[in-house]
Length: 104
Image (cartoon, rainbow, N blue to C red; front, side, top):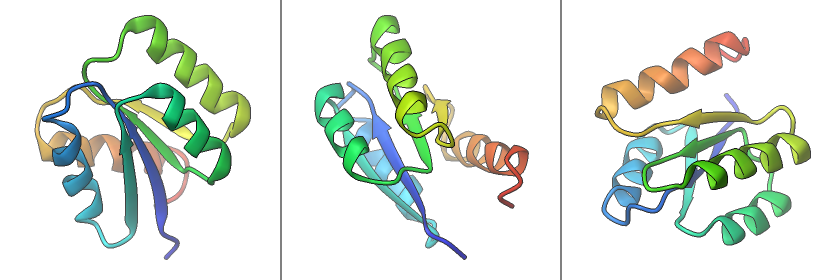
């Protein structure tokens, strides 16, 4: 199975390591996290990203602009807004999106 590449963007410094740990716990997933959208955009342009997770602390306009940026440059990328609810909800959101895209 192909390793899925994740980019996580969030402003809550306490949450980012938790999201990284949860995503990277799956042997078929690899995640990097950023708290700065400009650094995240630079990384995004240089790497093939399968999923973007938008986490807490991002202003609405940044969320919309970053989503637009991602879909403009890599239209096949899935963007998920995840603002909490525990590891089960996060995995469910990811698997649901993979199922919709026919990747499961």
